[in-house]
Every structure is written in structure tokens, then in C-alpha cells.
Image 1 (cartoon, rainbow, N blue to C red):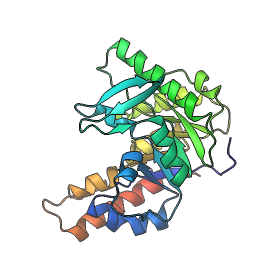
Image 2 (cartoon, helix red, strand yellow; image 1 turned 180 degrees about the horizontal axis):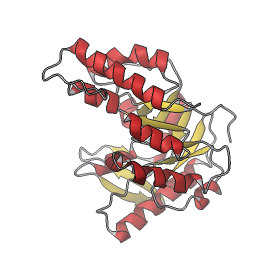
Image 3 (tube, rainbow, N blue to C red; image 1 turned 90 degrees about the vertical axis):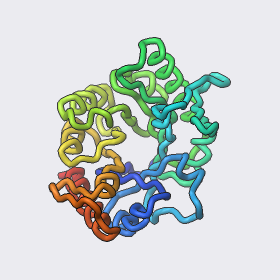
Image 4 (spheres, rainbow, N blue to C red; image 1 turned 45 degrees about the vertical axis):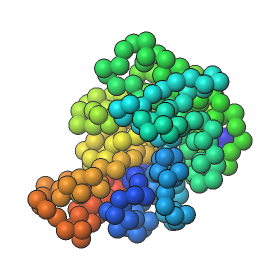
Length: 264
């Protein structure tokens, strides 16, 4: 296990591609404890500049939800092939995290409700295999093992990760009871004091639900996505916002999420 202090609170996701992210970045650097960037974004960024704050580097396994993406086994490990032929492997993820991460996450694969039982079991097994491989590698960063809702945490905890991360809740983010219970179920299996990160939760009310259930950090790109559509969580809306208006909405959303994720 590493000795770096864990990230706490709300962590905005930055894509490194969209103009609104570039406009918001100085505020993220001032207001946020960290930024989350996925491995595919790191691999395809146009310059070498990264945000000047601790980085959480996600594997990008969420892309398994995209049309045409395939999850397969190679050498006992799970890999993701995107529709354009690009591949994400545990080795690729580890290499990017070793270069850039304060905190990294193992490569797992989402299991949406419509997935059959056999495919769900296969994906969960591959996620555990990837975690086992990654946590055996030398590293200079914190590494959290990723689990899906309903997946037993004990096999991951036996690998002695620096924390756990729970995915698969973003499609249910408005069902605050469901996400609260899913986070609480994982938290109850964990040692006291171990960090628990939750992927894809950004609305202030949803953040309050997962933090009340025991999460220590959570991330989302919703601050920017909502602002790009000309909306804020405070109820403001514009049909065709100018760039500075989108930035204002994004900043208001970031502040609301940051406040909701603040620890007492």
C-alpha cells in the first residue's frame, strides 16, 4: 500500500478535448481536490499539459457501454476493444497511471441491468483478474480496486488495495435511495478508514446521498455537460448560451457539487 493521503470530496472529470473544459480548468485547479482523467483521454490528448493538481486516472472501462465495444480475455486478463479498433488493456492503464496518477483505478467493466447473468459473471471475473494483476505491480501511486454493484468486496480486499471504487451507478443517479444503498453495501464490507470512491455521480443531491452512505470521493463530468446544454442545477436555463454563459453555468455547477461533497 502507498502512503499518499487519499483524495476526498467531489472530483470533476476533465476530457482535455472540449473548449468548456479548457475554460473551466483554472477554476478546477483552484477549487477542487483533484481532477479525474480517463486513460483514453490521456492517450489522445493534443499536448503535454495536464491540470496542475492531483490526478485520478480512470481506466476508461466505462466505454464498454458504447455501441460496438467488446470485452474479451487475453492472457487471463480482461481487455476492452472499442468500435474504432483501439484497445484498453491492464498494462496500458498501469503505464499511464504510473506516469501521471496520484490515484489510479483498476480496469473493470460495467454490468448494466439488461446484461445477461452469464455475461455479467464473465465481466466481474475479468475485473477481479485485472485487479489481481494490477495490485501485484510496483507502483508509486494509490491504486483502488474497482467493483460493481452487488459484487462481493472480500476478494478485492484480500489483494490489499489502497481503496475501493464503485462503478455502475451513473445510470441510476436520480434514484438516490438505490445509490445510497449500493454505496452503503460496499462500505459495510470495508475496513474502517479505507477510502471509497464512487464513479459518475455529480448532482448535488446524489452526492449527498453517496457521501451519507460512506463514500469519501466521487466524480462526474455532469457540471460541464449540463452547462454545455445551457443549464445549471440552480434551475437557470438558456436556449443558445454563449461560451461565457456556459462557463458561468459550469462554475455554478462545480461550486454546488463541491459544496455537496465537502466533509463536515
